Image 1 (cartoon, rainbow, N blue to C red):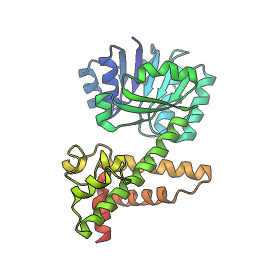
Image 2 (cartoon, rainbow, N blue to C red; image 1 turned 135 degrees about the vertical axis):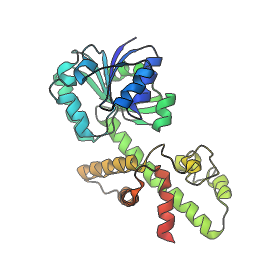
Image 3 (cartoon, rainbow, N blue to C red; image 1 turned 90 degrees about the vertical axis):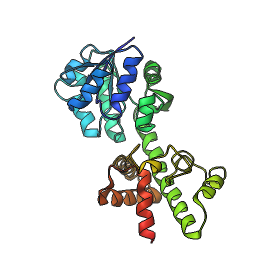
Image 4 (cartoon, rainbow, N blue to C red; image 1 turned 120 degrees about the vertical axis):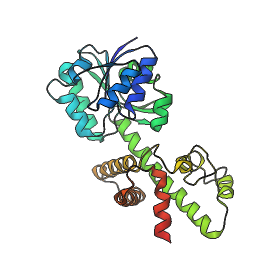
Length: 297
């Protein structure tokens, strides 16, 4: 079993680190929020008082942080990962951040004698808790081979997307598609309501016809057809509006850098930004159906 330093023990990182503890690894964790650290200790992890203490003996370092600036600080600052981790340690960043920052850090890591990969995830809090996450991994072949056994203890789909940064590229493309498809499904149900078509009938038809997609079949945005969807729990977030908006903005930044126009992605970003601006940042992203219904009434 490996000695692992885990930085970022929040809603996603905490359960991920706990699953590594369950798998028998020696896991040292760090987070600025005491409550997160306490939960990690209850799960059997070992708390560290600083980034340096977290990674000083680590064979593997894993980070799960909110944004690119946080990742840069954790890795590049004095007494950060690059300065404090043993040379040759495997560095895995599971945060969802911009591609350019990821690739820059990957180059720096290589210069300093580290193998680094980006491995953003899909699957939400439930996936983190149940170790069923999908990891979209950007790495060298060697890095992916080293990381895969660790990632498999936190997820069930471990996909090598190409070189460093390609994991982030896959994540923003996937979530742009998710944001667009959820809006399409919401609009379809709103139209069905106005036309007098029963929601369950629409679900029964479209979930087995050409309209089927994950936003409909697994995460249906109206109560009833999919009992486990947030729509049946007052849209309590599995994946919040704020998180969706973050990923959509990343997709638009990436599109601008690439010189590409993504009109549906841009419209989805604008709709989620407006919904978040009404105080709905903590609501599940499928809850946007309420805003779309209001705007059409």
